[in-house]
Amino acid sequence: MSMPPERAAFYLSCLRADSERFAEVARLGLAADVPACPGWTVEDVVRHLATVYLHKVEILRLGALPDPWPPEFGDRDLLDLYDEARASVVTALEQAGTDLTTWTFSPYDSTSAFWYRRMALETAVHRVDIEQAHGVPTPIDSELAVDGIDEILTLMLGGPWWAEGDTKYPVDATIRITTEGRSWTIRLDATSATVTPGSDGDVDAEVFGDPNEIYLWLWGRGKLNLTQAAGDDQAVEAFRSRMAETTT
View 1 (cartoon, rainbow, N blue to C red):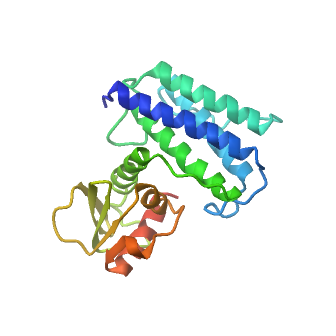
View 2: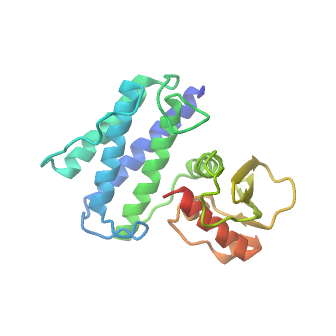
View 3: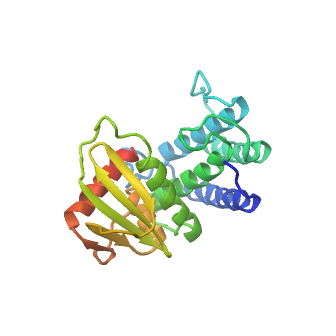
């Protein structure tokens, strides 16, 4: 999927800034518990993100999933490993450009452009994770958060994952998400999640407000303010439970 150069530069800028902030916060302490990831500490999130970065470096190098994976890191200092990994993934993306054919988990995009967006968003969410662990949260860039809402709805939720009805939450409702002048209308049932850009048609409930807050709520990193929803509260709660299945 073709990506304008200015969009690629935006994602790389966000990735650099958030990965640097992540490193800064991680150095406040690795033992702190991460509220959004029960059972995980900051150390676990640092190891996870470093491994994710190195995984994408290999995917971009091979054009396929690396096997075997993951590698053994031995006695490497974790923060040093993370710093190397974040530098490596930026370099790998820059060298690949945005038109390289490679493996992705998207049924819609099999180019390296996919990983520009995904790595920027992955980093932003995990940066929030460890900021929450240390009580020093900062907002996600608003433009990136809006883009992240689009990704989590159209790809994570709206992908072809539900045909077998493999859900504990067979929601039968239509939900709308609205922020920063954009809307997504989501029609849910047990075997599908159809996401349509725009605000046409009736809905059972609508969630609206600040893009950072909505994005974090969709990822289970924040609570929804009651003033940010209208309509059927039970439908909103069931929708969020379906999102949790999508993002685990």
